Image (cartoon, rainbow, N blue to C red; front, side, top):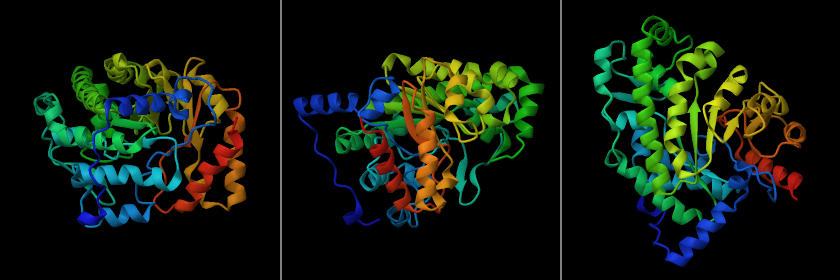
Length: 365
């Protein structure tokens, strides 16, 4: 990326300007929906909205590794802003990766194209826990810098911080990379429950520290991604995973920002994920949104849940499926429109822009 491509460093706003911006963010449709308050329209954002579906993303990332990209505040700022400029979404999500805090504390890992995070020495014994030291703010100073730059640029648009949930991080560490069956992970969970509990507890502390850095720098909400939780039976989630996720949510509760929980293939876990303590629970497309809301409970906002593959269909079909989601959400006190998982890499960006416009138009109050 050349100097001309970079977002100029923002100037610090004056105190009155900062106060006005903060009030506007707090009154945004996204944060109002998270708080289950009346909204001018249903807010929209997309998981993985900043990424490979955007040609401008591919241009600025060319020749730069994923983890290196996450550690460059100028690049993080530009990539995070790209979908806000293009799609006019109601929230930005901080561009990073769930393994960034692990890399920051010295875990030897890399993100390999076409594979995902790969850990050099998988965790299998109690001795391995010594490699998980606490995360300090200085370990991720680039996050603080990037969030500060973003909040200055975003104005009234909220910024969502995020982190990987303890179970998903543990799975990467124990398996050594992505896994279809999670056999080593489950072997530890069943066969060495004390070691497993200590591993998740340590990861909960690291995750909470990472979220605190983002909130203290200016993030208006946070999302905890439990990408692999759908591999678990409800009893295993309740007994062996929920306590660590609850610890993360409890740790950031004093900040008063909305906390979102999301996992893939977690239809049978939605009620338990709600018990972990979030304010908003995301549902993937496998469960109708009204049924997902019933499972989640009446005291939470709901996020979701259009199938990402629908965006490859003709525009009338996309709008018909989006209308089904909106109809299912009609009686919910808080709904954030999103996909049921991340934007697929080959998605037409114009389809996303049109979807945002459609949801805003259909739900204008």
